[in-house]
Structures are given as structure tokens and as C-alpha cells.
Length: 112
Image 1 (cartoon, rainbow, N blue to C red):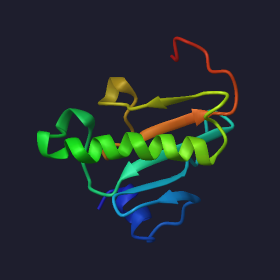
Image 2: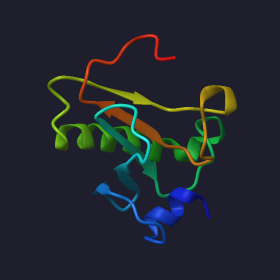
Image 3: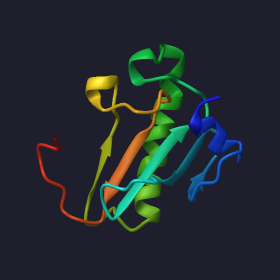
Image 4: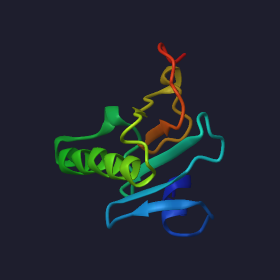
């Protein structure tokens, strides 16, 4: 099981802020912004590059849930950033697809 599957199964504690049948969202343990939440599909897809056509509905749901979390946390009006890392050079550190939801301050570009 991946780290994120263990969080969804409540085997590892996390500050969960939102959950549906398919998606769980929790605060990042090493935040890069005042609000930094990971929005994770419960299905273990290693990375976006390994998603299949069959995963398309879940990927759409993941984006919709990220938006719902942003609204729930009061970020919709001021703005926020969604980030998906893919592979080592993309900054991927956990081999389970997830979206970083960042907000609560102005975010610079380029990001890094």
C-alpha cells in the first residue's frame, strides 16, 4: 500500500479536510503555503503519466473535488494553485497521483 492508501484507510493519521467515496484531501505535513492540501484519489494510480482512459472520470472528479476543497477553505475568491508532479524531475516524491492545492498568499511564477 502507498502512504496515501494508508492515510485513506486510517492506518496513518492525517488532518483530513474533505472526503468522498473516491477522493480524500488532507493537509500536507510540509506545507509550502499557508494552505497546502493534497487531494488524492483513493485508487492508487502511480502518476498522471500512468493513468488510462478508464481513469478519465476519476481524474475529472479529482479536479472537481480540488475546486470544492478550495471553496471550502475560502481560497476561491483570492485564488489558488493546483499542481501535479510527475516523475523525479517533476518533483514527485510519493508514487501515488495527487494534486497539491496551494493558497493563502500570492504565489510566484515560475514556481521553481
